[in-house]
Length: 305
Length: 262
Image (cartoon, rainbow over all chains, first blue to last red; front, top):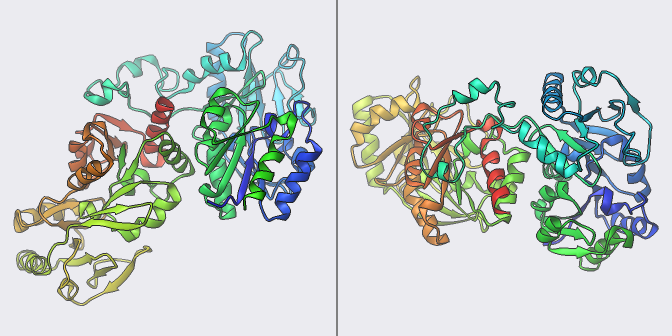
């Protein structure tokens, strides 16, 4: 199948390990765009952290941010579509996580603004990805911010890696959690009549649906976003707008949050620096992000057309 | 293999396959799980939807009267109700009930009598209005539909069953009409053919549905599931109830299977 679009993760993929767009990569993106091939970012970053690196790399015309929660127009720097938590949902998640994980620090991302509890950055010794402090504010009562609704919540714990924290927080927000399904009394009242092979297969619960999607990437915190969103759903919305079939898309990434989009595209590609799960499902492996892997992919696709 | 009904089950109430569902279907196919539609829709009303959502490799259409190859958009098998039998059934129903309006699917066209629809639907397939459905039945039909204005599909089904006896199979799908097929034709009967072609045991199949015409396949499949919006008769026979069609119930099942098999 002819590849008609390239979807690229940003951190660890398009950007090198110093968060820069390498010149050879920008030059390759430019050649692809001149050949009529959209090169679109599909990233965990919210829109405020997409505009500048996307412009530096020449990406466009559209992009996906916040792991599928926003669809952006890179030419006009506008958000075309946004999937958010309501204030009620965000406050409930805040309460669940705070109660179950002592010492956890929480931030609220509203897309154009990032509000965090005191201490979130202290031990991290690392600015938010993208390096920009613009739109960032330390807030005492972070729950009040969450109660206004948001794109996602961010959580970190000084003693946990992001993967460890995700393993603790994700079950709290799943459909079969006593937290998510209401009080423990209610969960004990659930019908237990389900039988047969579904139960044997461990699929014996009736699902009201998850509260949220928990995603870990290579930074020291986790993202908690609205349920059912992923880079895959964002890419599907983007493809509908550009009238490109998923079979005609090459997608390249390096980390867990790239797996959903890599599973749905015609050509899934991993960077050499990718985690083993990503390498395992990729049809092709490119050089690392410090060796212009995205440029190598673009050259391969352009020469194969 | 996951077998899913379309309208009311995989599709939202708005009639669309959500982005989350498309992602789940394509991910499941990638880890080797077939995602096979079993629908009352005729083949023509499935091609575009299947291509856009990644369903396949095979599909059951017209409540079991047709087996289709979704990758090639071709019809592989059909059970045609012969024209003389269809006309005899229409005649018997009219004699017993009077003012029933009929429609028929052949592979190219959906022909209907005046008054069958309250408002013409926005369907992919060609619609043709005929004064008497018998004019359109000469070549046989893959599915005959009856509607009695003011009566629900399930209520009409109950009235039709004793009239057609074992000459036809009667079912209904959530639209306000009943469906008439050749005897012994159901979603389940055609899924046997799907399993034979794909070398899968029905015990390895999860089937998901919401309405009366799904009961045969829910009894047939190793694991039966309903979406939360299903009718009580369906909820009563399933091993597990998923979130509703509007809450992406089938997608949540597929996501769970992808997690387990990848």
